[in-house]
Image (cartoon, rainbow, N blue to C red):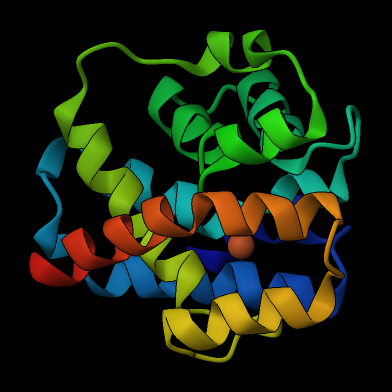
Length: 175
Ligand SMILES: [Fe+2]
């Protein structure tokens, strides 16, 4: 499975590639807990969630990734999960980006996607920047160490923390 994604992940730094591959492995490891309708898409999205870093177009990686995957004919579910991963909407707001950038990837009334989304966020929030497994506390602290106060990422993480923690809690509660 991983070799199928290696071309797409090749432009990423080796640490970022290690991170995104581990997020994929984590979701694959718990895939049986996911509704069958979204199982494969959740695993694919997890492996590729940070692919946008390797294909910068707008410079906002969740949307760059979703756009790329959409042109490569990945499913609407995969593109949705990548576009919205780990509170991307909040970071977009902090960056002053138009909320319309998410519209092509929105899916109405998709409760199974919401479950899949929790699992992708959980895996991302419990995998450090080089692929090591961490608690969400450690993960948030590490992001705060990497990005200084007042920076976009730091402000976004402060605002999205409750959403990130809630998603992790829901995912862990259903495992
Ligand atoms: Fe990630």
